[in-house]
Image (cartoon, rainbow, N blue to C red; front, side, top):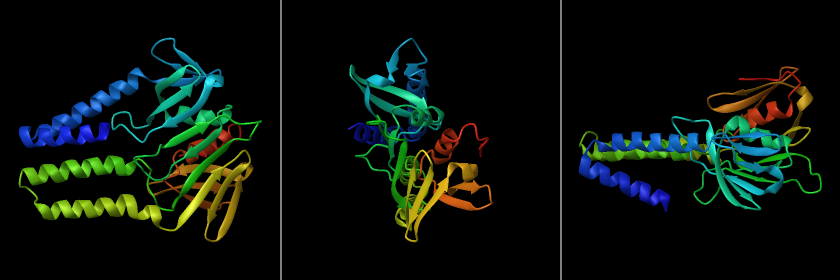
Length: 266
């Protein structure tokens, strides 16, 4: 419902206020950034603590955690999560570097959606049962797929440029079709191309593709890097293994799991 209202409001602004959609975009981002700042949190000493105020959520009281796809241009490395606790549902904003800390807690069963879907969540976190080892599971996705939230961001940008262009008669229908095609190629085609599956456990990283399964132990890794089109892990013997950008926080999870081993990330 929020998405529908968002789009309708935008179209109304374009039609009645001309260039007002630029102001709308700016106000939208500022409002979102303020909400993230107001609900900013940190994981510390077995709790999730709101930085603004003294409110805390004990990790032992958490039933599950789900995080959405919404990203911010002003605060790009943050995500809203809904924390389902014994006392009800709490909404909080965490930095990416805080999200990865869950893997070192009892909330270490983490599933990450690699493909944008309006009915799914980017992150799903549940407690370990009977002492289960940490597990980060990524849905199968194309090896060149972008971050799962990118279609959301790029789609909104293309929509604003295309509608604005049509309204001002600057570009016409040709540019609309071109932008739509570019959006489809950049965001959606790579998702289904040469799919791979990725999992991180307490021992290392597992990569599965059509050629079989490849395991990289943490003690074999020297560096984890984020590149433009793919993430990559470099082993101590110089081998390079590539992972989809859609594997959200993969380098950060690898670094968190190997702390104390002087692992580098870039």
